[in-house]
Image 1 (cartoon, rainbow, N blue to C red):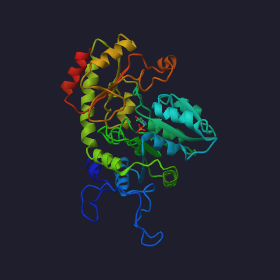
Image 2: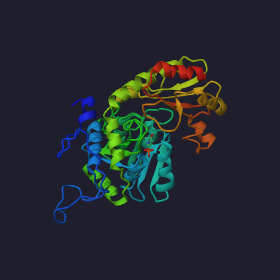
Image 3: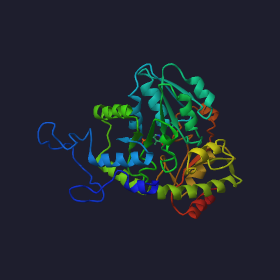
Image 4: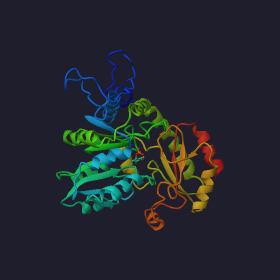
Length: 378
Ligand SMILES: *Cc1c(COP(=O)(O)O)cnc(C)c1O
């Protein structure tokens, strides 16, 4: 099956008792048993729910994984992955990481005795030098937020080959329509389904897909034991969203490319960060491992200041000023004061994240309207 067909049909079949084409929202906490432990595969809804199962099968299909486990949020999915480790284990991750992931790693898991190295993952030497005897997991995120750097997944997997290191990719920014890390050799792929998979800014969720049976068993144990599970209604919304993933992302990317070109030629713009531009430092890697370059575009202003950036952002009317990404509607945000506000200015600047940096999540509106909106804000 090709991707566009899978987005609608992977792991889905009409519901058995009624023939309902869409999976019902099984709003139940428990399931009747015929005799103790004689049930139809479900005993208690923390452990499993048929609406959730439908969603898990769909995401597994899209990522080319044997299985998928869904969670109450993206960070709950990451939390479950980290709980498969034990104190004294070492994790290597990128220094350009989603803020919530960084907070979870450093304020929850570091105090519990997990060790972390945050390195520039666009430099393979840095990763190689960071590998220790006790390294058990490499956490990648590509494209990164908000500078849209690209990590070479295959090359990182090669570095870990033959060692007892699990490679996991946060695939939220690309979506499986554009990038399938398991096909590049990664052991597992994680999503904030809140973003492109859900696609309509109406539900929070997370997922981990893998063909590593032992790892999936550990995740299922986490689900049963820690219980950060999504409700059936949210599973339904995300499943419904995924059915148009390919059409939405394709249009968003078309729009993003035009917007990146527009910004690239604008005299008030400093730098444009978009993996589809040939000037992007990892353009070739993006072209190799992604089917297209995504719908996130960041740029700085020539007049680099927080004030200029906030003036600009208060003037857009179609681009809504908000955190998050990946929905049908275009959003605009200011990393320095919003998502990355807790990072000290010097650290932020050193990482290349300027005061005036503006991040766009390009949606599927008419691109002329989007460009006009940016034009009048300039
Ligand atoms: C949003 C996001 C997360 C966290 O997901 P939630 O659903 O908000 O918990 C993790 N990684 C990336 C790249 C994200 O954009």
